[in-house]
Amino acid sequence: TSVLILNGPNLNLLGTRQPDVYGATTMSDIEQMCIDAGERLDLSVTCHQSNHEGVMIDHIHAAKGVHDGIVLNAGAYTHTSVALMDAIASVELPVVEVHLSNIHAREAFRQHSYIAPVAVGQICGFGAQGYIMALDALAQRLAAK
Ligand code: DQA
Figure 1 (cartoon, rainbow, N blue to C red):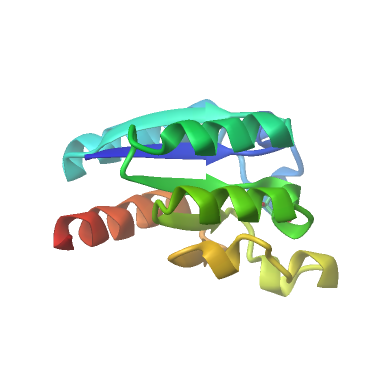
Figure 2: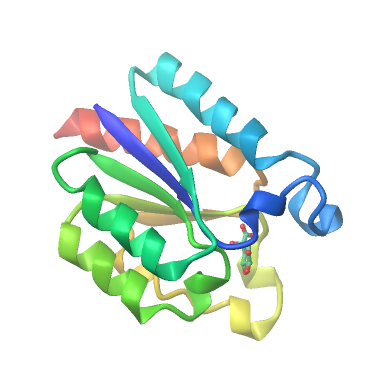
């Protein structure tokens, strides 16, 4: 069983980016945490980060037939991208939406997600741990199939 972890814009700056909001954990720390959790859950984990909407869409398309599910933190594209929503709907893979911060406790423009209607569920507000929670949820869902 194989899972894609896909991270969007500005998440490459984690660690130094607004640490009061996003924590001190870096993207490579998060990727290593996910790979380690994958070993425990018997999931093969592949990680990508991109600052480009189209590149993210290409990763989602390429996941079909290769991965069994996706953990997605689309960053600010969460709140803007009909194109990412359409890509997820097109590949018919289970997607778990993750945000480090609690987007519902922040500015009004962060409280709407284009990803949520096409996701299995959303985990937000738990920092880096949210990725592990998402992997746990996906592992259980995929095992139940
Ligand atoms: C984020 C929340 C978004 O609103 C923001 O644009 C990000 C990060 C999060 O992980 O909390 O880039 O997705």
